[in-house]
Every structure is written in structure tokens, then in C-alpha cells.
Image (cartoon, rainbow, N blue to C red; front, side):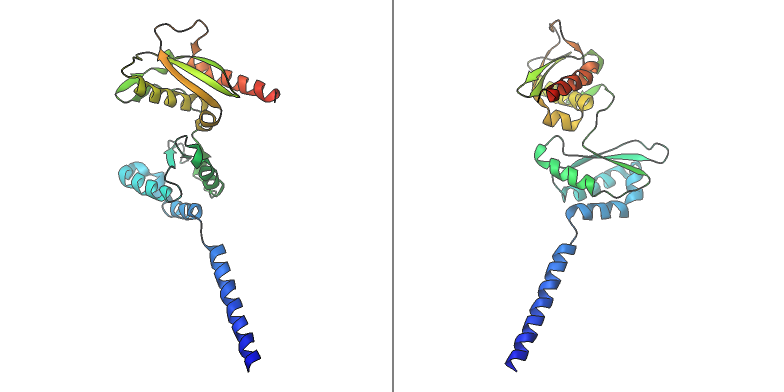
Length: 222
């Protein structure tokens, strides 16, 4: 009788432990939950213009359940296809969440999923009440302790609007180099007036190529 009870107890415990382990193993991660929600709401997300405020609020709330630093961008509807960019606004601590969420993305015919904001064609910047034509922005670039230091010379920069111009500088760099490279490969960033730029300053449209050349050269010497 005692042996039988012991065996029965072991069997119950084993069943309970197996159920507990299986339940924890099978439990969806926040990333999986996000993509389940995304697929369930795919049509409203694809046509977000119909109710932008509601869709963006729901998407932001669901994305923040994965990590509160995550954000997103939609590409335009091109022949019934869109890009969906997963970003952390350059916050490196959240980069692993960007990567893991991207890696868990399902394959959906109407979507291309992109991790981190990619390089874009340079566009004029409007930010903080200021407007800057990027064609007029100049830069210099230099080695900075294993990274790349960049100085931007921006028209309209003054000591009074310096903080706003720093924000504009980051938006310009984001377009030129992409979120990942700005966060991981760029060291010092300086913002100055364009009133008296150095002779070696170049148009910002040339930044990406010079940056890539410097990074390629540094990797060859590692």
C-alpha cells in the first residue's frame, strides 16, 4: 500500500512537472504575440491611412509590450506592397529586441520587414520649428578612436538654436547612414554654423561614400 502510494505520488508529480515545463516552453514570447496581433490586423495596418490615429495608437501599444523603446515606420503602398521598419530610435540597449522581433517576423506577401531605419535619399528636414535644405549642409569626417567623428555645418545654426540643430543633425545622419551605423560606428558628432566652413568640407550627399570608404579601410587594418 505504501509503495503503491509512493508510486502514485511520483506519477502525479511527474505529470505535473511535465505539464509545467511544457506550458512554459509553449508560452508565446512578446515577439510572437506581436506578430500574431500583426497578422490578425494586417489589413487595417496595410491601409492605416483610413484611420491613422487609431491604428498607430494600437500598433504603438502592442509594440511597446515587446520593448517600450521600439517604434516603427511604414513605407508607401507600392503596387500593393509596403515596407515595415522596426526601430529603437537609435537606443542601443534595445537593439537586441529589434533583431529578435525582426527574426521572428512571418513571411507575408504584402510586406517587407526591415530592422533599423535604413539609409534613405536625403530630404529637407523640418524639425522644432526650423527648416533645413539638406543640399546646403556640409560636413567633415575624421577618425575618432576606432569610430568616425562627423561635423555638420548647417545653414541657420546659431548659439540660440543649437539644441534644435543637434536634433536636425541626427535626422540628417539617420537618412545618410542609417540608424544602425549612426548608433554603432559614429563617435563624436559636432554641429556648427556654415558661415565659415573649412576648405575640406563637402556636401552631405557625399557623406555615405566617404563613411563607407573609411570603415572599409579601418576593417582592413584590424
